[in-house]
Amino acid sequence: MDLRSRIIRMAREYRQAHAPLTAERLVQGIEVSLSYAKLPEGKFGAFIEEQQRIVIDEDSPPKRQRFTLAHEVMHHLIRRDADILSDLHEEFEGGQLEAQLEALCNLGAAEMLLPGEVVEAAIARKGQSPRLIPELAEGHQVSEEVVIIALAERGPTPSLVLMAGAKPLRVFFSAKHERVFDRVSRGTAVHRDHPLAVALETGLPYRGKATLPGHPTPYGLEAYPKGGRVYAVFRELHN
View 1 (cartoon, rainbow, N blue to C red):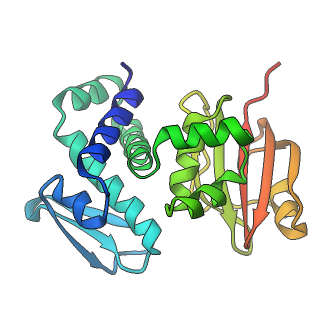
View 2 (cartoon, rainbow, N blue to C red):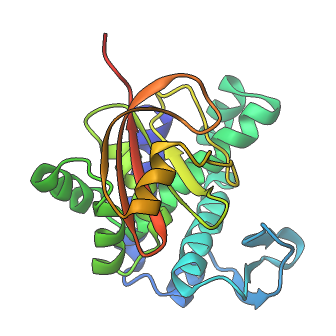
């Protein structure tokens, strides 16, 4: 079983053992304490090893806090799994190791809070549509980040999924399938002529070809604007 499958199984088993996953039950399952505090900008959570305590940014929205908490729980679970840690260190090193660990914790957090079978059923009904991001987030009371991660992982075509907003337009969050090479970082600027910006400005969905923000490679893009944000699925194009 590959690393991603093992992480999903770990998260699923944790959810089943400790449901319903309130904040209290999330931390009780790993026997650590929880507190909230003002954290530096761009920092949403932290695990303080010597105190066995998770600290969550007090200014984040509640759904984002819950996602961050699940992410920190995944860090703890992975640290306790010698086999997964060994495989991670065999395959990756340096910055690549850190990036892979963060991606796996995000993947596990998403599976904890939004079961993969729910996402697959939604994709079967409506396709891997960016409309599912706000729809599933609202319907299952999870953050949009959770849905973005799940859509990128579960979609039928290797893809990168993101949401963007603000003025000037910038990327708020993105996730990608493991077979997609390109990455888009939080805060990446989106040019005003890009279809994402046009969709947000006009309020009209977009479907066609477009480059990823910050990259020259064309992808198949489906974008959906709603509530001052634009949600997007960039799919790899097949020759």
